[in-house]
Image (tube, rainbow, N blue to C red; front, side, top):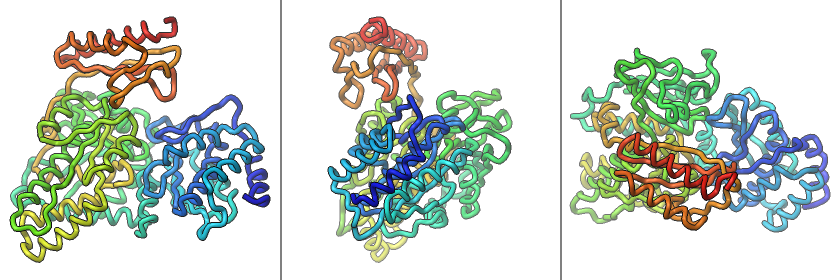
Length: 558
């Protein structure tokens, strides 16, 4: 790193001094806090993104959003070359960068990291970062800070893609780095064309089936997703969508609306009520990376039947399994392959969903909580499906499997055009294009749900009857030091402190279908307790008993 570059860092960073007494940590959501405190951090993440681009010699994404947080918050995160999250290897550097107290410390930190990582400042291509932001009022000023950070690296190119959903930016990064067209129009075209393909492949006996009403009402969380869905639906046929809470009707972002509110409160979002009984409803979150469905309970203005991420995963798994079975039964194939389908959940997945998936004969894997762990595990399969109950998830297809599927489709179209096996192969190819493989995407997920419901001839009520969730309860316990809790087996077993897991097992054994685990928070000194059992009373009792155990072993006064 030459003197000109160091001088540029000194001069630009002096305009973005970090706020006193604020320490930020880069997690799954990137950096996230009150927007008034973020200017310095976003500037430094601009530097981080440009350095990452130089290191990988690829396009990097920078998204300014706080997803389902309140409107006064904002955040910033990086999309790596594959469209996924920033590699965990760079997270400690991100933390150090955000919290460096002075320009001198910042420049020293960068200089040391550049040497350690052997980042080429004279590579054959300059740093290139594409930027997006959601609809928060603070986004414009933070975008300028990010551009300043990128511009502090000589020759770096910053391209503002405007107001986007978070998944759109992730998709664009992945597309750019795989040689595809990567504009917003290209995103909409890929989703709409693959949706049309799947609609055309619906069995004729199902195409006029009345099981799935063609009307869908969507809660846009007063965020970016509603407006984007409005644009997208103009390119769709066979699907009638009414969008509410799309941010232009005076509603406040994420206030009484959105997937996070609906999933946690099990309550109708603003603008929904008794008039919607019998209608299929869906809710996006603020930056459209989460999706849940719901129906308004008859006889109620506010209660709902929730169809969460676990049920979305089950629907996707059922459909993909069906196509794979059809393909495997096709006779006379020269190019047969037993596809490895895997489902990935966290311990927070309802036990009833896990039991249902296992009864289908599917391989169910568990990871620690966090999208980065789920995504990484799903990538190990030919087809990997992951979802969290909160509605965040996607489907990953391996390059090797897609290559095989393309070859198989060509073989089938020449040998047995119009066969059920050819249709199954075409459906799987269309799913691989419709679903956003870079990140969980409420818009692409919604279209896939809709076409599968039509394919099955199912109503939302039939879908919701796949299984019945076990009652559950979540509690938080304040502790003196969360790091005293060490877990194993995807956070389902406490290793330390000694004796706690045995005590949890004893309480769990008292309840029919009991299951309970505890895990430390990643950000504050609390331990989270999750319990489920055959009745709500039993789940509440189990959670309460285990919370008392946690307090005895680790509480602030223990």
